[in-house]
Length: 453
Ligand code: 5AD
Ligand code: SF4
Image 1 (cartoon, rainbow, N blue to C red):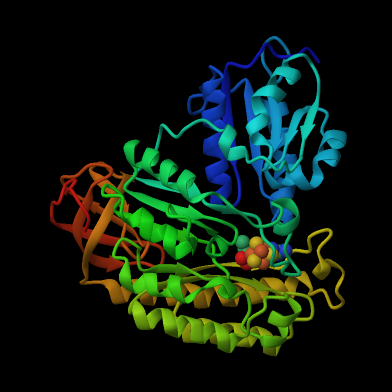
Image 2: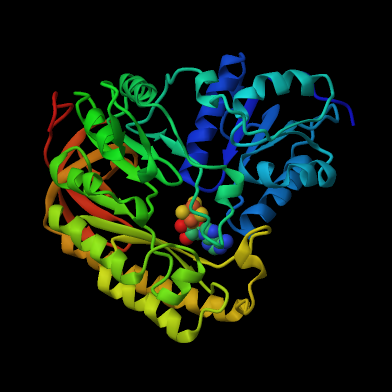
């Protein structure tokens, strides 16, 4: 197979979580700095980076089918295929296997090594196949270019990795142990994002509320300290964070929800199951009751806060009665939104070898029932918002001409028409609710109002 000439255009395809979206943006910036340009929509690229997810089996299968599709459909007139790089968590976990199974893949780069992409590209251009899945001590962030582009809402990775070792989860193995980025680097990156047009930042981390660092005065601080410092940036209007673990929900962070107006009234706090026995087998380190009491404390300081969660059905040994307990917790919490998954055994995790793996059909039925309950819950939450007035951050054009899409403080997708622009915070009345979005009407244009809210 002849080699392609040095790549000039690239495409980064990210799968999975928001951190992968963030990593994908950073890789695009790196490649742009190498003089390459992003391939236009619908155009074949010289370099394709598949930024992969390893969290569930299906996500992994997708990588191999994507590689096959690229090789099949993207062949060029001169017989060359694009340079294919596999990045992300599948690269980390199965790098060697990918290299053996997919000869068309020329680069494999793990989530902690992608700052080395330019050097790897140089080697690949000479016809070599290159793998880098090291987890270097030096931070990749220092080697990445400064932020120059941003939408109205931007992601900012503040923490990576996980030390919790839930028995079903690959993240501690693919992303490594918990590391927090330094406070001043994060304030700098936030400032750059604001200069590039961001009005909102979502702080990302596999365990974002485990973030710890030293503030500008050398005092130890947690995520709440970082949030308070970010809230002092005058042109930043909204702050969010995800994903959190119940064990790291500190007093200070809960208090921030009542005291920092820029911290949006939304909390993604996965519980995974409504059964104490299953939670213990998952090594979650909390009970149903301690989770519910935590939510009560959050609601006490931020009444009406939108709650979100993740659920797994069909964890090994989960009985019908234990699954019913998960339905019960959904009823009692009234989630505004949530994600739910069928348990997927992941190689190398303790749960993968546990007895009583649940039959696929049972998982299907449970997932359907859970998703129906979660749909009812989000519809009820949205219906209860009808008639409210709130600020909506305009993020993009809608599908219909003249339509805009934005987010309410509670992270609802709001669609509306009117005189505004991307990045505006408009005052809107919420008028009609569906389970996944809500219609609004602009109440009063407040285009780019300066200063804090
Ligand atoms: N099977 C199914 N769902 C999983 N998650 C993590 N690991 C697995 C797995 N092996 C879900 C959890 C987590 C979310 C990011 O993905 O609910 O919170
Ligand atoms: Fe995975 Fe549990 Fe860590 Fe979340 S807290 S990333 S589910 S091990």
